[in-house]
Length: 201
Length: 353
Image (cartoon, rainbow over all chains, first blue to last red; front, side, top):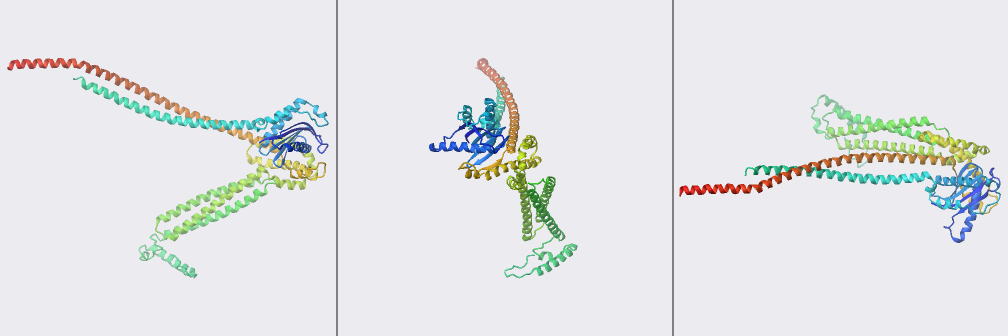
């Protein structure tokens, strides 16, 4: 389950207009061979541009390409594209995109609307986000909650098992203590009896 | 009566029929005079109760045939339900009809179950009653098993139809719709995306209600989402020419999945699962609390027992101490008594000697 790339682009409000402009780019191509990396980066840029161009405003889209899913979310012309593999849950993917787009808008306000050419400078937040969100639970609170709940359930099951064992032990203790009290009663009676017959002597 | 061993194939059914008729007639006569001697010569129809086996027999047959008819009708209804279910994806669900039919089929199946079990008990009664020919027993068991199997097959088909229909309703048969809508929608789709936004805001709340009622809505909204997807796909298919070199082959590999309503649907489902997990957890906690409470009682009991033991043991200890004291003091008394006895003995000896 990994994210390969995150891109932020500026899309033309009318679809089928000009190509979108890249505002930020973060890629993790370390699992490709050394010589393939540059090609892969170009490919990512290209596919990201195409998908963003074809995403109508205020829409979320997912495109399946070979073993990758490309998720895109277009919000009023600001488009965020993510390249995830097939195992990454779709919902978490979109929550990642949501967070990225919120962060970008908070940071850059409306300045992105004026940018006309591809930005080459890095946006560190995006790189951090890429590494942080490799685990989908980080992005998606629901998934995190579900995971924690499952763990809690397992722990509770174990607790109940140990409580049952405790119950069994308590049962045996009850039996033993009742046997003990019966035995001590017999002991007392015997002692009293043997006391009484010796008084005559 | 077993028809004669057919090693060579000879159709003796007419003889068989005439024989059975005569036997039936005999049977009726001997019902009036129960002590006819012909009984003991007939190994097969050892009918001590002449009328009742045949009446049982016919009753058994009647019931079996009724059950068979019922099963056949039920399977027909199930087939109709399957057809309705398949057809219902695109247009308005004949929802009420389907539900009525489902309820009807369920009732039929339960009634048939009851009838089959009745038949089984009837057969057992028959067998227990008199010593019938083995063939009759075999035949009745075969009939019962056959009916049971048919009923099970019908129930399974019913279940399959229900699951298929629920799948169809939930996923909305997207592929089929895509093809059809592609034919119908052309320029209308442009105006839809903007409208769709407001639609989707309203969609999530209905989905929290049970799935049956929401079954219609996803199929409708997926239809509109498919339009957008088709728009994209058509563009992708059409745009084989523009600019880049790698584009053509890659685009044709791409496959668009309508996302908008699936996203919120996913969230709703996830929320529901979280909610159910939390409820389960609360149940587990309650169980835990009950168990611990019970065990607390056990601990109290143990405590009481131990206190009782303590008091008993202390009492016994006191008694033993007293005993010990008495024993240790008695020796002195014993010496005194023996001394007096010896003194008396000496006096007696003095008197005698």
